[in-house]
Length: 372
Image 1 (cartoon, rainbow, N blue to C red):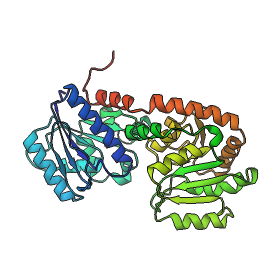
Image 2 (image 1 turned 90 degrees about the vertical axis):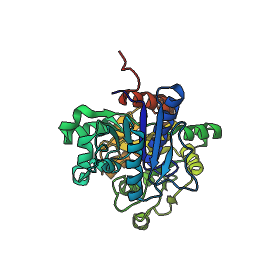
Image 3 (image 1 turned 45 degrees about the horizontal axis):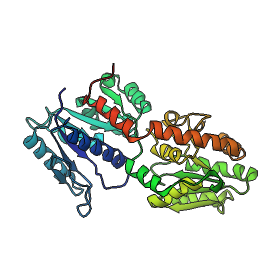
Image 4 (image 1 turned 45 degrees about the vertical axis):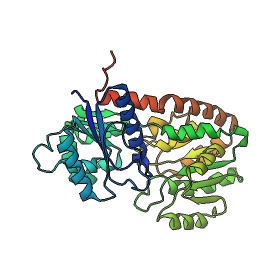
């Protein structure tokens, strides 16, 4: 399918969250392809962008801000489709694609792509989003893990599913490189977890880490757990830490700045997020970029990011004893952690950098010839 004009329908670019990180990389690639002459035009409609601090407009094309209004987003999207007649519409979330499933002549017929992330694809959560998947020209997934799960649940879509594994935002890596990296001797006996503390999302492994921590503390009294992130489940987790007798060595950091998070990545000894809900787990890749070995679970896409025994350890989800044993073993073997850290830094730069993502995206959208 020749593609020369693209319309990006995105949640936002200058906003927080993993979806925005993906969208920034997509928008960056589109601007580069405009400069290279591989695209003629790329327009954008952004649902949540702050009008006071929007992302710069595309190199060739217009940028429209919906200011958080779904009705305005639909109207702007339909207007852009009518006026610009894009060859392809790109949605960064399957929920946004419902805007093109309205019965207007000339709108539903435009080919579109949806980028999918994992949790929104559960059969019980799809609802009207199912029609979006059914009508998509191509469905991009954030990992091979998500692709396999989606194809298993919806075998009729298998031929249109293309994995485009995520990358670390290149703006982050540029800032990190400018800030330098801490040597391993400067690291503290700390385990870091990063994630939202929402009662609706209790699958990231916070509870298992707290349950495991008394066992970790018995073997390594100096060790502490850093919990970066905030949300309505924080009071419950803080109370549980006190009940377990580890409230003094479990530090809830709240929401931290990018600069503070980078410092924690450079200062901790292990990153641990034994989750069951990661469609990719970009924070694993970010930790690895800083040379930080990771502990994840065998229940989600951590198996695709973490090489068990080389860049970290994988444990069964919801097994505090196995988690404690893994953490105790790693903290007690500094030389192994150092070797893993070196492997982490190499793998993050090789496999989770923006150039690889850009190449995968181009192939998925057929913007360059397939390799022989």
